[in-house]
Length: 463
Image 1: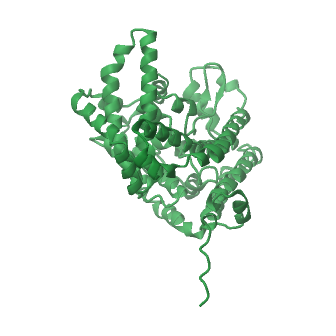
Image 2: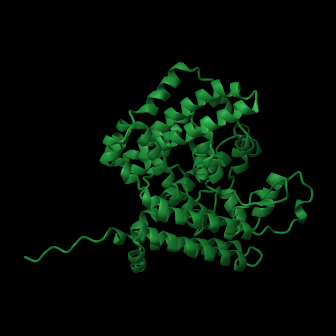
Image 3: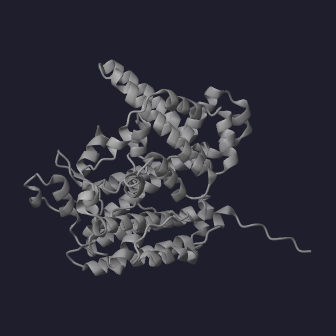
């Protein structure tokens, strides 16, 4: 009896193109990751060409929409093969009915498309199905009062700049970019009081793109070194779960979670650079006259690493997804907005048990952190020394709390997540529950959910 052929290597398993398999074997990196990076690097070059040779002054909106859609569709097929046809079925089914959809995250493009479809659906609903006086300032600004054409719809969902890795963006912003009104619109929104903004030349994204590519390169190097040295699988090993003492587990968990970040920094920063290279992502001019290209940025690394509260950390991590959750859930549900928003986030990510461990734990930690901040922070603002001590302590607590909370997210399975939490004695769950039970909770959630202008939201984030 002939022996069975050996199973295919993990790096070869993909539903997409296998033409880069030799490169995958040479680098020792899974083929789907190689395909992803190849598409994003090609998208970067295509974005530059798109900005220079399909500029709105040279090409019609229809041509720009069509090119962006066709190339984005090719990227999806290259990365995920014809198996990704369910993505196109979803897109076609949702056009015309414009209803919200809850979809399992089989692929990253499906997750991004789900965000865009639901965002667009609610914004069409705000524009066509609600009274203007019932909308917040932000909802009124983004409301869509004319149903998009089919080409605009396809381009918004499948354009090559964001179909693979995002980020999600608003339909009005995207159409304004395609039609060449994006820069003027943002200057009018953010810098409308400055009378001389009309005389400013069209801003160049070159500096922003180069800066983000440098961040991408550093993140890639960290991923190839730090992430490989401290893999998340070591959190399930016997020496960590059974033999290490509690302080060692606490410190090692923090190190491992830090080592897991570079791949997110790499993917999101590269995606941001792709959009900027095409001329999309301009957000206005700051007080020093510098052009800002952070409209689509998905993270602020400095604020993440120096966060002194769970809220500050979440506000600067996966920013566009947080904005989507706020748009489709937090601002619209009548009760328990924090809990329901975390549950929606878990459902959107997929079916792995680790996601639900993370987001349900996140509910407890968020409520506990809010209670501590509301009851204690004002006692430390009387002097710079006390404030410095408060910031140092809350930074350490925040970093350890985030590491504990997100560990199941990267471990995925239920058994290792439970094993990890058992080895940590469920300490953060217990502390959070005690804080929620014994510290008075001030009604901040209702106040925060009142209609706000975009500028007031940005001011809060910088406070």
